[in-house]
Image (cartoon, rainbow, N blue to C red):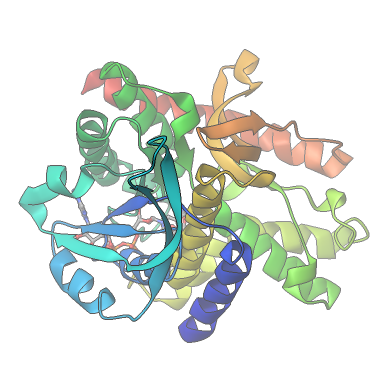
Amino acid sequence: MFARSAARALKSQSRQFSSSATRQSKVAVLGAGGGIGQPLSLLLKLNPHVTELSLYDIRGAPGVAADVSHIDTGSEVRVPRLRPHSTSHVHAHPHRTALIQVRGYPADKLDQALEGTDVVVIPAGVPRKMTRDDLFNTNASIVRDLAAAIARVSPKAKVLVISNPVNSTVPIVSAVFEKAGVYDPAHIFGVTTLDVVRAQRFLAAVAGTDPKNVKVTVVGGHSGATIVPLLSQTPQGKSITGEAYEKLVHRIQFGGDEVVQAKEGAGSATLSMAYAGARFTGDILRALNGEKGVVTPTFVKSPLFAEQGIDFFSSNVELGPNGVEKIHGLGELSEQEKKLLEACLPELKKNIEKGKKFVQQS
Ligand code: NAD
Ligand code: LMR
């Protein structure tokens, strides 16, 4: 199953990237030895935009790096080269193929892992046994400390937060950057792509179609009632009503529970999350490399509900060379979606405030 996901991700990445030359992009994965970190590192090794992959964990990262580095993928890199020329212009050399550098860093080498990174992806921390909020005590300090190191060593990196509870960990990373005086809200993202992936997969099953024909926007946050799928905005979703609609929304909001229960205490979603994380990282890299029109839902500092004291929110975001380029509004909502949003906002507000308070008190 994983092999199929990986092949699909590779195929779609190759499709997206085949015509474009790339600049060099160094990507770091913090938590690379974990259930998500390992397959995510594998998928990133397959992404032609990644020219350097830096794998860090408090345990096991050098082993993951050695393993992943044997994969025989290279990368098309455009290399600017100074050539002797009568007018001394700089010429871009057309292309050369380079092997992706993969390095693994042990616990005491975080700064080295972060040096010169363009993108840092964080799947470090513990997975849940009960609710995502239970993870707060452990993961809040892990994410805070990693964010402090990024702010110090690589303050301009785009930071992609996977560690739960995302509704709180993104405000934590943001507050740490703010404290360090290097905060740019356009650079920090909560990865909510798994909600989109699930919504598309589950809706496709109900509609009896291929998921590739289905595009669902999911807004709000990343846990239970804060996950708001906008099914009325899709051709396949708008005709689903009554009990079928309720069941579908519930499955999207609580899809994580299905995996936690099926794994019987051994963890939460890892493979589907690695796929989703690689997909979102791929979107960020395409935008950093100048591709226009890359739009996807992600949890960012947002003005949409700021007047109600909710200053982080996931909605469709256009990505660009500096990260967040434009935050889209929600569009037209059905009466049911307005109700879902009403239920989302107070819970999201509490989660965000919890994250901010944690950094204030640290
Ligand atoms: P895991 O326990 O398998 O892996 C976590 C890894 O983090 C481990 O290898 C551990 O050594 C490492 N780690 C712990 N402290 C660290 C530190 N200070 N620095 C670097 N690495 C550190 O867990 P997992 O299943 O990979 O899940 C990781 C996180 O992702 C969890 O918080 C989980 O809830 C979250 N998650 C988020 C989503 C999402 O949609 N955003 C989806 C699935 C899981
Ligand atoms: C998910 O949605 O699968 C993740 O957030 C992991 C979890 O705790 O459910």
